[in-house]
Length: 404
Image (tube, rainbow, N blue to C red; front, top):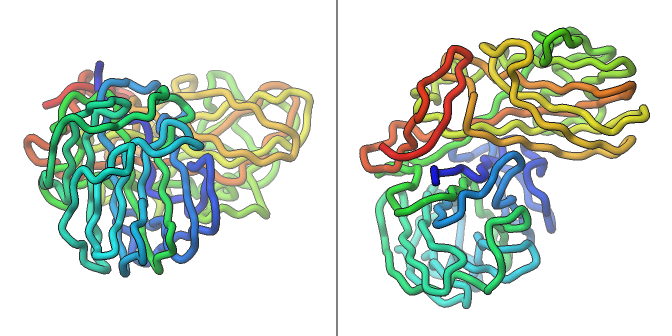
């Protein structure tokens, strides 16, 4: 089966729209992110954040897995701190962990919390990127791990299961800080399924060739959308402006609103400092764009029906050609939605198009919406670059799979 990016995040929304579970009071750091404009600070309080192992719109490809995470510490914990734990369910025990030690080293641990390997001590105030290949859900699994693109250990026969199913919607990557550490920044996470070897990892051979996440928003200060999402559909906001859905962190005091008559529309992320990815100097080639994710924070204001549609694509798409999925909303109850894919992201010369639509006579309030890209800069030979199966189409869409 082809490689599948299950999920990724760079915590660019400066909120928890992408995380199904949050405990404690983690914060966001906009001073020293590894990429983009924000990183998660899991330090400073006993806290944990779960990232779904399989994002909405994705089917786990099974077999073996690779996951990646960037960390930056300011000190060492008083006792061992498992800052990353892979769990087959949010309430289950970890089947594999990365744990920061009192001496500043990181241990790779199995399902019984046994040590598989230990890294060299990490410096304070420096970013490091770890990638792990593992035969998860195996009682005798192979593994290999990498620090800043360099293999630092491998073996077979590891206990990487608790006997339960893995790879479902309830499986999670948990980021946690217990005991308290002053600052532990986390950034640029990804989860890859369908791997067959460690060479399937996304990163290259140096820290500068590791995955990174960038975010884009529209800043269209208009009540009229750039384009209808469906052929013959509407393209007008009844009240408010599209830029009311383009604030970071999220602003709960305003929203982009559709009211009453069924309407739909998309806005391009083609202005201001968030233009993109066209004009973003961080994006160094179409083949280095690995996946995209749309994120919406919205609620239904009224009306009888509960079904809405969210749309994402690029500014080369035409009416009726946007990726979409339906969502269900309750009256005056805010909810978060995400839609991840590997086909039809914008090319480096194009811009995201993102929006929403109504079904029936009802109201829709979009507090915010974000579009994010998973990007790997200048991947070196042998670094696991995903191969384009189909060449770019006229609307900028492409499909990933295989290796080169």
